[in-house]
Image 1 (cartoon, rainbow, N blue to C red):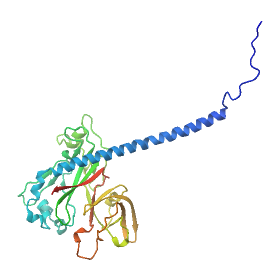
Image 2: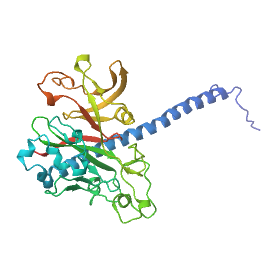
Image 3: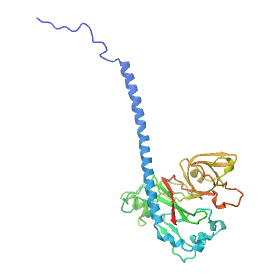
Image 4: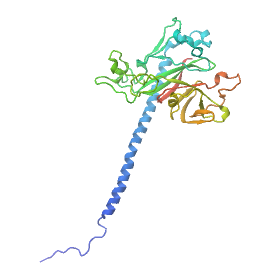
Length: 333
C-alpha cells in the first residue's frame, strides 16, 4: 500500500505576520486619506478656472453690448458740454444735485455710479433737464448666459461704473462680472432667470443677482436690495518708496473690509486695475498692497505741483463681492 506523507518542512516566507498586515493597512490608509484630501482641492481649482474663463466671456459680452449701444451717443453729442467740467450734471436728476461734491465729476476720472433700481437691477442714465430721454440698461440684459443661450440658469451678472478718461474726456465704463449669490434659493416651479427678472411673480419669490442689506453689506442669498459697486477715496504716496501700496484717504467704514480682502479687484480713477495682495497699517495709515505696482510716472496724490493734476490717484471703485472679471471699455471713442 502506497502512503502519502507531508513534506518534512514548511515553505519559508509563504505568509505575513499580523503586525506586517497592520502596518500595510496603516500605510494604505494614509495614502487613501491623502488622495481623498486632494479631491476638494482639484474640484475647487477646476471651478475657479471655469469661473475665470466664463467671467472673461461674460465681460466680453458686456463690452460688446456697451460699445455697440448707440443710445449712449445721445449723452455725449454736445461737444461744448464734453469740455465742460459740469458735464456730468446732465446725468443726474435735479433732486440729486444737492452738494458741490455731487456735481463735480471732473476730468480727473472720478467715477460716476448710475442709479440702480434696488429690485430689478435696471441701470438708468437720466440727464437733467428732461431734454434727452434716459438710457436704461436692463438688469435682465446683464445676466450671463442670457437670451437664447440658457435663460433658465444664468451664472453671472455684470455691473458698471462710468468715468471720463483724464485729459481727453473720453467716456469709459468699468465692467464688473460677478457670480450670482451662492446661497440664492429658487421657489419650486420657478427658474432662476424667472425669479431674477419676472416682476409679475409675488414679491416674496423675487430675488436679485447680488443681494445687499440696506447698509450695503452683501447677503449672498439674493434677498434685500441690489448690491451695487462702491467707491472709496484712496491715494498713492510715491515718497514712501512703496510703489505697491494704496492708502486709505477717508474714515474707515465697513466697506473697507470688502475693499481690502485679498483677491479683491480695485480700479483707480486713472483706469489702472489692481489685485489686492494683503492689507496693512503703519504710521501713515491703513493701506492695501496691490499687484501690479502703481505705474511709473504717476505722481503722489498730494503732490503740490500744478502739473498733471488729473493724473493722480484719488479714488478706486470695486464690488463688495470679489468679481470674476473686470475690464474697461470705451463707450464713446
